[in-house]
Image (cartoon, rainbow over all chains, first blue to last red; front, side, top):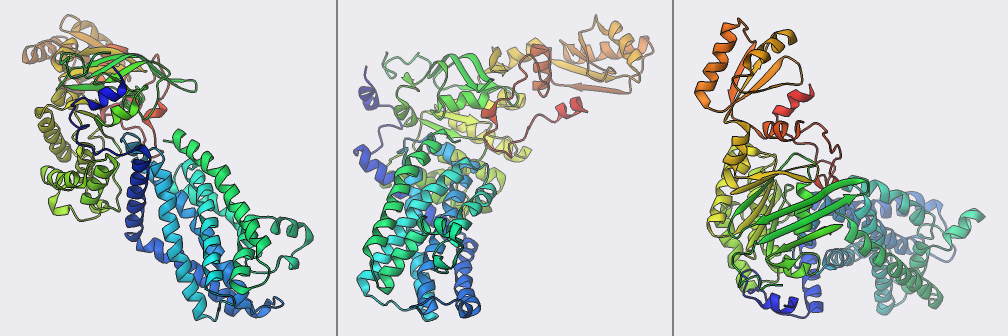
Length: 274
Length: 350
């Protein structure tokens, strides 16, 4: 007797389920998990407040405290700064992907999910999809904050939308890296502690806050060839004007490359975790 | 392979020669089990015995290194998806999302088990009612007590009405009242015809719920029988006496040999006497000691515990390494899962 015939046997618990092709179920299950993660997020206001207050403080700090001492030729500093802040915000937000997965693992939720007839891909896909939605909210919020302190788009609405697209794609690629950190860490606190040393050099040794040409030569080599600088440069060009093609292609290459390398790694880590 | 429905006498769960290693650690060392339809099978053993590993293989979470396991006639390794559609799992770590309400948790499981909305919405309400959670249905689960979380966790395992249910230490860490509540719930489920495989460290729990009990240790099955059968191998009652000195204990031991099976305990001063018949044997022990003028410091009469079963069957206590001194990493999926052995064992370590 084949497995298909067996599935059709009138065993209670298997007969009531609706029929749908596997890819349909994978999307259905990922959306169910994404929805669950978003509901969960709205129930943790301290997390939302903490993760939005931090970038707002950075905006105020760099605009009003350090900003006067930093000059970037050809730009108002607030215009130069905000694309960097957008990028910093979504990159630091990616830590939450790892923390959330680590929490699910520790609480036994992943174990339960593995015993259910749901799509195997849904836990990771649902998590990264929910984080994408969260990042849309975060980017829009930071745009409003930027507007309040004097940031203005110098291009047009297409530049703005393309810039947001670059940011979201880059954020999506980073969530896969931190998914791995979350699945490898033994608890959420460790996931958080492991994430910061990865992120700090990427974010601070980049073009997010200052021009990389002001850095020592050895640091420039790193700063000019890493994904945060690529995403910031592309976003900045799209929102403020200037040559865009090379920056956009660089950033797309980084983001797509990171997903191609780290998503399969994350999926393999997920299969072996728990 | 036979049709699982047409042959009602086939075991619902069949395990043959199951082996699982974690690196050098042998978690399962060739286990055989058979669970009949509509019964509760208790897997009894200390932490690290391999109970959780067995459950994880049967629920398709882990794959075995060797051996064969079927649920409702379906091979867990060859067709895990078909197995998942027919099983429910409630674990010792109350796997619910604490930020979701009780109702949202159950509906999520309904979605993930691919039930139509018209089925899982009323089903969630029904389970909340059945487990006495209706009043808390719209509160986040983090506000629930330990007992409420376990009931919600059990409810989550039942959303899609699985005919086979795995309960991995369902009451570990619960206070006695909550434990009793959960036992009543599980007994009601069994009355409805669900087949249950239960793991536990508590003889009392296996005694209360299980039709058949397998005692496992070091990844091997060391005994199997009904609760009365296992207890009978122990003697119905145990008298535990503590003498003032090890010398007095040696004397007392010699005197008590005719009364029952006497074992000296870890500290050299404590003896446990397994006596077949309750009150008569207790009086015999007291009389023998009286006649020899050996007055013990402590004299306790009690039912046999899992610890006694273990001491009898394996020669070591549940928290002592025996022939298989290897912990089972499968029983410790999270770092906060510290050893949770019966309280009496703590004295053994002292």
